[in-house]
Length: 309
Image (cartoon, rainbow, N blue to C red):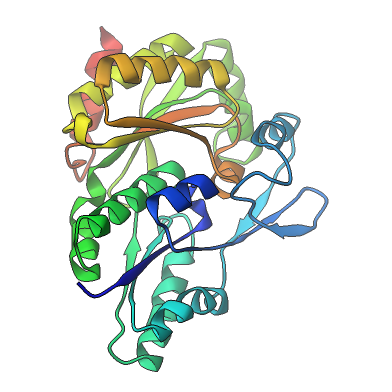
């Protein structure tokens, strides 16, 4: 088998220990612009500030802005592998959320032109944060199993629509501050204990497919939803991600372990880049399951039936 490299952008949410464990060969870093106006490369390992402090600052009304890496950075990331004649599989955050995919395609074209015989397979994950990390893990596992770059890329393209999310968002005020819902809606929704529940759409966005009343109801509904959608959990890892919701995270961890029985559960904070847009108050898990329907009618029907019980 011809050797190949697997790289991703920093929204994969994988800290160093997991990048090394899975064999991710490289990461390209975008920037975070802080409330005071200065910018830094995204801190994938939360070394400069803890995830708790980062998300707590958003509760105190801090707003962060993100920018993706540029083409030159991506070429710099891939060129050492291309010089060795290695093909490259490059996984990116959803093109519906960022320009990273388009930049990766253009940089891959330049690499292929400069190094004949080298192929760059750019995968628009249509996912973000730990869902992208889960796809990275699957890609590395395929390589470990003897698949080449073309086979790995083909599996990712064929199966990326099988990666789900289940969980809740409970900070409606952050969504109001960032203009995604009205302030009045955030106020009355918070009073009513509304917890929006999202799922990935075919376009690579997250769409609200149900609204639970109360935290426990929402978390229990997420588990019930996953039970209906999940495929072969004993053969796959589940990623559990949160933005400073430790009690809810620990509750979900126990329920996933006792009711879904996955191969492994990996619990991580939501990465800085995704977190800047998702905000505090999110807890969700990501898993491999049935293909998501084109109009999400199946997913909405399943969750609606669960919430109506």
